[in-house]
Image (cartoon, rainbow, N blue to C red; front, side, top):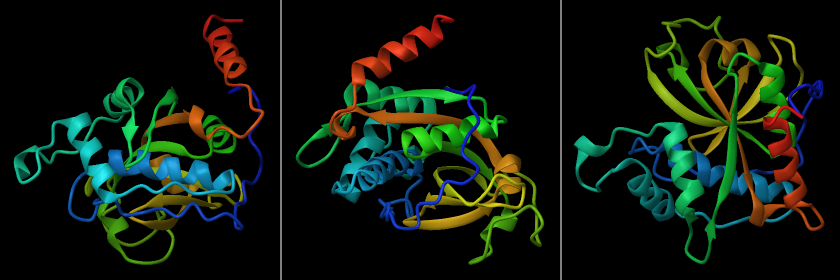
Length: 225
């Protein structure tokens, strides 16, 4: 999969991924919110939507990180690979169903692979180091805007890469975060990215898709076939 060239553009203007805040305005639960919004983005691509409540995201945040409601000392965010492993083992529970993902990682400096994840798996689950310059409201996140551009000066964050209008350094990428769509340049992504993961949900696969073939092909790839 990663040997292919990614599409030059991934335009999804007619599809609303409907991202939600899911408590990330007051808690450091971006890893849990990111997974909840990945479920919603995947469903939107198939033409429907899944209800994810703030309570669902916070419960998963508790399970995956040890956060205890009311204890600020335990609100420390999550390690993405640990959070993904927790979801794969125990699922991401909603009010009426529980979703179980499979997931894998690509090199964060391989933007072609990141784009392939976006095109083939709905959205890429990213870990980024935000800079203080990114606090400016509105506009496009870029490495050329005024302020402190040091990656990490505003801390780490989990968000989803959803669409892009080109592959040049100044082309615009649509990111799902904090209940909305934030635009950024690929130059910004290259500067800030720490990790990139692909996530797939068997329960959300389109009718007729062959999950077992997907799993077998992945196993063959990992075995060097």
